[in-house]
Length: 262
Ligand SMILES: Nc1ncnc2c1ncn2[C@@H]1O[C@H](COP(=O)(O)OP(=O)(O)O)[C@@H](O)[C@H]1O
Ligand SMILES: [Mg+2]
Image (cartoon, rainbow, N blue to C red):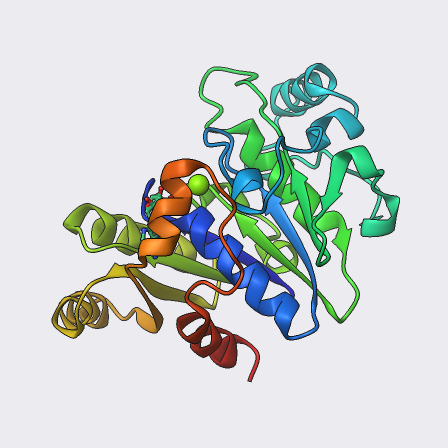
């Protein structure tokens, strides 16, 4: 298990969960890479204590324009969008220069995939294709774990997903919208045969709320592997744009990591 994708409804707490998991994994002695693959939100670097995000990785891969042209050419030539490969050689973390990969004092590394515009009308999200290609070509050492902050959908992981990610954690906050997005992600994942899709409940204020969410998800064959409680320290850090302390919600995160890394 070394590539974990985090998805869920916007605002459900994906970036917070990524940050907390990264901290917890680091505590356990794992080497951790955080991949910011959410093109539209930019707060993750701040949660980790950086003033700015690293240079976008797409710069290292030849630049936005080149990638867009490659994608466009491949799609014109008849390759389905989901099958286009934008990165051809394998990559290791040691191949990535420091301006593209920041490191916190305690050794959590951060990569920012970057933004890429639509190359063709009808292309759902070229950025998703860059993320998928990168994760597929990224070779991690056995003690390295990548935690990927994704946008809501998983459909872009379509082809080759088994080599791109090992599991999907869907963050669910107490709202019907969030539950519906989770259900959708679960269906999409099944269609493209991602085996391990689990739910993590976030912003939980009582056992009763957790039970109600669990009920909904149980009925849809989704397993809840953990609960993260509403946490004032996290809330205020997000409000002020301060880093989230790795020690926030330790007990909740420990249970999730015990499940993922028994
Ligand atoms: N466990 C938590 N406790 C308190 N507030 C939380 C928690 N998780 C998330 N939040 C709140 O939810 C907001 C959105 O979280 P964020 O991780 O940015 O969502 P996403 O990445 O899914 O869009 C945060 O700004 C914060 O106010
Ligand atoms: Mg986010």
